[in-house]
Length: 306
Image (tube, rainbow, N blue to C red; front, side, top):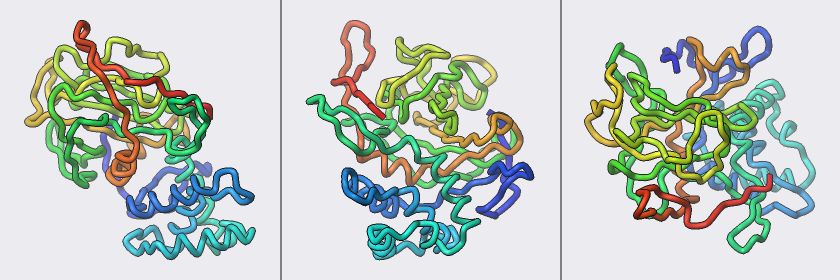
């Protein structure tokens, strides 16, 4: 993970090779929830609504300023889509629409899909999870971009969930564990890459001495909803396994990767995870503690089919 400063305020920004190099994700929780519900409610119907298309049309309409959001705008878009009009035509600006569609697809493509419920029945809906499980309290605020000074002055490129030490940390999305270990900034941390390689989830400041779940292995897959570690306050130290963060919390970051050259560079694309976190609170797993091993496990296994 390389820290950097954003040098542009533009939302629509490509490299010379046509690769997206800059993304802001501004939809509010209310907007995300409404668009998601329209998508889910249309499943199995003649016209399948795509929430990513709705959000892309709105981004063009609002000039990426989602403070302009009105629920009636989504209602109008859905009405037109049901009348077999295309989202691209509704956006009225193909270049900008194509940009937002590609960017938002990279962010949200793993969020909705089919899965098996506890009765082994196939359902369609939200298949990513809150990083904090059911029954565990946390607080958070819109802290993306706030100043950080350890090592050097830089913007905060993640989202902090304030929780008690030892709170189980949940994998938001399925993927492969790319990295586990110590980092002077993040302390004990985990990096998980989505299977399509577009999204990199960064979980940091994990617990001293026992940061990771015993089943977690580097270069191995994890399932969305799986317990991967425990909240702590490690980091801000060159000395491994040091508590040097004032208050225990989970730092979670989401990086977009359109090309592998963007994974570690001076212009990494990190997103504000605040509104997404509020959406994920609608889908929390329940966990139970094994008194012998002191590890936490899901109460029921989760099964995703798509």
